[in-house]
Length: 283
Image (cartoon, rainbow, N blue to C red; front, side, top):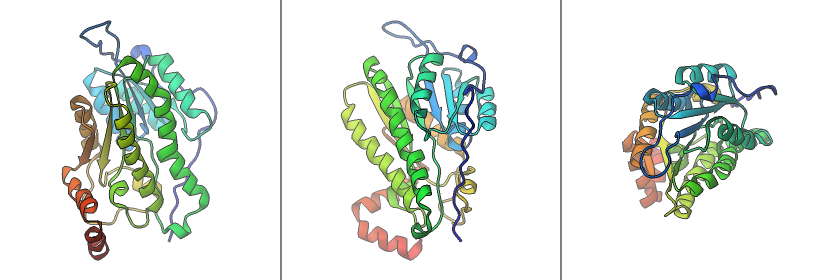
């Protein structure tokens, strides 16, 4: 049986669903030059990894947060918990990326950190996948993120600092059966992270690719099929959020959650034939 992710788009209306930016907790950057508040924009913040990242950053009291997500009710709750400003929007809608970027700049100032956590999945054989669902997965997981990065990156380069964090997936590194398009989308983010990092060398702007395995979030419910494998065991979204925070603080390029997932990715890269045999034999 094939299960599709069913997506509803929020009705047009005021995008602000939480306290305005004046109530956020700012950090005044210290050091040479004029100080200003650091701003973090987190997408996919309605639930899952995005919500956990928002709460992790909000708990520090050192970031002015702008959150984006498609579920206004859940987004409002996360924003209230983190003293953030929020913008409820489906980022695949026309001009949504521009609206979010303009909103973030107007309400909180230049964005120093973008955590791109928005994403959806779909479970089932590729031949049974509705064509419009292919577009939905690629639009949400790849194109919306690339468009938003394109809008925010010049400001980071101009200021000589900043970081883009892309939430990928183990599926993008090794490929997962019955998740062909999702695997392709996350693989695209990984390649984008590498290529962009080369371009930004020497600018002061970093790119982090976070590669989680199975995460205990509503993702599997939304994609229409539960997670039934015994391995890898699901990790909490809070663990991924901690990894994101550590990567930002330490300036890491790539992080696996849990760390041992680096091994199958390395095996696939070094001996793809062996990896494919093992994947076919053991799942």
